Image 1 (tube, helix red, strand yellow):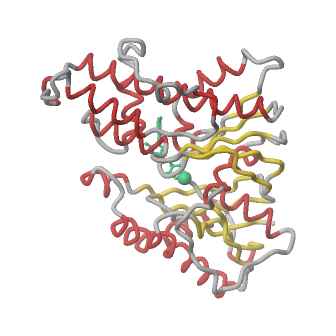
Image 2: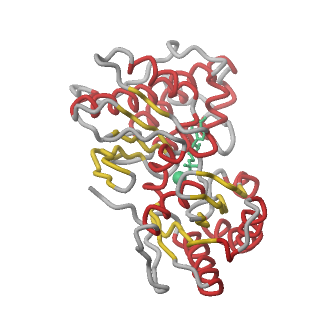
Length: 343
Ligand code: KG4
Ligand code: ZN
């Protein structure tokens, strides 16, 4: 069965065609970085308008690249939660239109569950697994018993990991999107030069599977302001900027790695998958590999390729197949839901 996936939850307009939930026939992503860059973050109204302008062309391109016609499709999967409400509405409205015009079944897909599915799509099929999803809007830990069987183990109590990367990059004057820019800057820095606490005083990092990044972000802010609090960004040398970036990245990655591996060990689970945009981070990948080897037996950590970590519709089409092939479908009055499911 060929499934068309549509994803417009944030600032990527994406469509993909996936065969039987596993074979990616096309994966088209129109990014909006250029539109949001001048504002230093995603502007919801700008995102929704750009989705509306691009969605038809992106869907056309995904069919053309997959060498298939609407009549070859077995269904449509669309991300309808969570995300920016106006952005989600554009994708959902388009999907409903295509489903009606082409007489195809439609299913709604959860964006975070789709990030979890990216590992399955990339060929990693070991269950149960612990999945860490780290993106601009979400930081969640799941116990995953199968492609659609997710139980929340922990989540952020304040900022998402990607949001912390983006905000710290902004403090360092590194532009938008901040995560990749900060990672590049950190390459020139010494991760031991500036130490940022991984958790609060009298706390043990691994004691809880929940995350908090706002304290780390604030620590970077006060460090940059200097001892008297009056230092301006211009007074910070290039080397110190790189050292702060590297120190922040090291702390953020260690928090993610330690909590995830501890959660796996607590649940006697030997497999970990990581998804979402921050999973592209090279230091995160290296630290996971290094720390996972310390466990006996060693925990296996799988990262999907970068194109399936950042927002894309292939993961959504793959997850939608899991519902469609069981005969599940949603009615055309399906609604968007901007909020993530809470534990
Ligand atoms: O999953 P994603 O594409 O969109 C959301 O669902 O949010 O994730 C985007 C996030 C942004 O915060 C971006 O800065 C971060 O992923 N990101 C990175 C890297 N590449 C993307 N963060 C750290 N290091 C990277 N290499
Ligand atoms: Zn995402």
